[in-house]
Image (tube, rainbow, N blue to C red; front, side, top):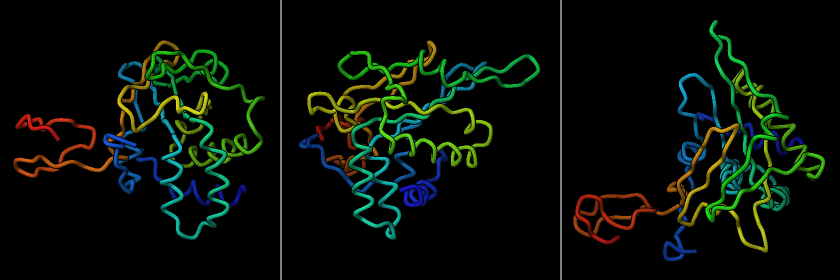
Length: 222
């Protein structure tokens, strides 16, 4: 699986049912990566969180027509059990040198606040499947190559994505997902517009975001 996975991941650039059953559009990977990454707002710190839901992996695989579909389906079947995050948090010293929190500290000091308000802790690596551990081992050097020191300092956190057959953080449903990393908050407003069909104002036909319920200019219901 390592070769297949590496090919999939190298195709990614980290420039980085309803809304009536919410209509899903073909995903533009660049739009999705813009929505799933969050940076911290503290000018004295360096912080970043990348949410990698199953839709991200589906989009990555969709960009590569040469991938064996059976292998892709097997990989997606394993990934859909989890929500994966790549997290970075550090501070800049007086001499301008950044210092980053290590993996153990980030693991202990990070949790999600789900759309329903419940706190959700990451899974210990010892409890992860061998396949997921392998995915992380492939991702780390790729991020290092893409992002340099930032990539080398990122920590991968894995959370269960379902409970009682229900998705805990559904990017198609209204709400918000928050991550707290050592006291700093990252937030994703849901749904993710990159996953939804665009809407059009009934008055002037302007293209609008799929999550909007009313035209911001005319007040017309969408």
